[in-house]
Image 1 (cartoon, rainbow, N blue to C red):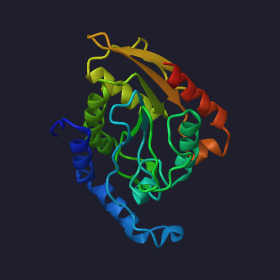
Image 2 (image 1 turned 45 degrees about the vertical axis):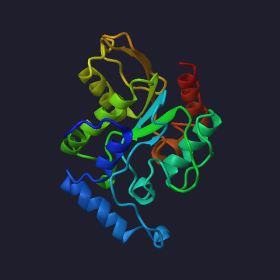
Image 3 (image 1 turned 60 degrees about the horizontal axis):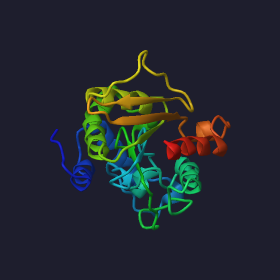
Image 4 (image 1 turned 90 degrees about the vertical axis):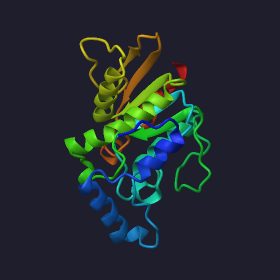
Length: 232
């Protein structure tokens, strides 16, 4: 896969990607069959790019678009329950213009922050295969590389984002503490490059319904994560 020199060029390549037949079939099928509540909506039905400041200091990493969230709206964490939990926290932290994210035309902006996903297509049952994760990894690596000049903090939403981020940073030559840091809510470590750049990596439970409905993740807990990120 070629390396893209700008976020705009990378985003264009992401939205045109057809590397994973199972994901292509699923995202397009969902866009046609739709959920009853969104029967009159025009689904995006394509891979989903990152969203936010192309010169971000804080980069949030998630897993994959939701079938009836970002796969519908075309913006990551937009139009589903996870986004309804995440964006208010970003707003409270002074990192988002609006306390909600409903559509690509709602005027939402992120300040000093960008959100990206490790996998860019909605997967069946929210479970991409190992092969699909590997196929999408170069997009994540390219986006991180483009963000490195301004990046200070990465917030990994969930264990897969945590481990995937560590893998990417190691491949880029960053030094990770040993033993390798384990994921946990509020866990953090510093990755260092040979040129002396330091990145703070913070773990957070994913704002999925499974975590928020059970109170495994509360608004106060997520506020604490973004307070850490703002202070880094």
